[in-house]
Length: 124
Image 1 (cartoon, one colour):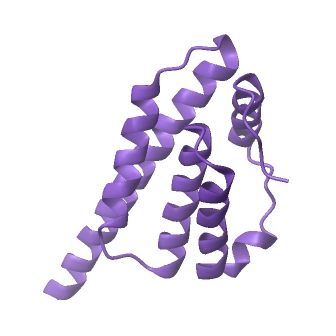
Image 2: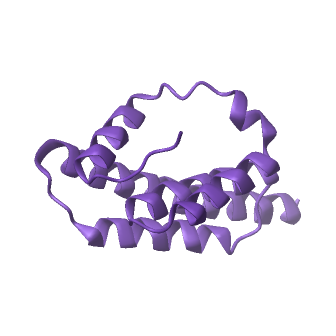
Image 3: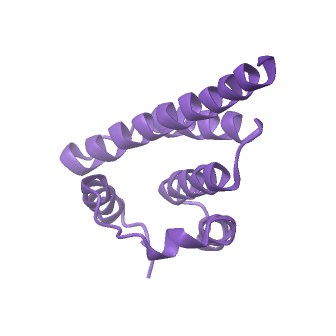
C-alpha cells in the first residue's frame, strides 16, 4: 500500500511541475501574441518547471510530454532548431502515438501567433 501512495505522489509531482510549466508558457505566448510583451522570466520559470519534472521518475508517455514541453520552450527561447527538433523527435520515439495526434488545440494557434510575432521558425 505504501508503494502505491509513493508512486502517486511522484506522478503528482511530475504532473504539478508539468502543468505549472504549461501554464507559464501559455501566459508568455498569449502576452507576446496579444501585445508583443516578452517576459522572459515566464519562459525561464517554465523551463525550470519542466526541467525539475524531468528529474523525477515518470512513465514513457509522461516523459514524452515533458520532452515536448521542453521543446516548445526551447524553440520560443530562440535556441537552435536542431535542439528543439531533437527534443520533439525524442518525445515521438518514447510515445510514437504523438505523431498521430491532431495538433488542433486552441493554444497552438496562440503559440503560432507568438512565434510569428517573434519571427521564430515553426515546425515544418
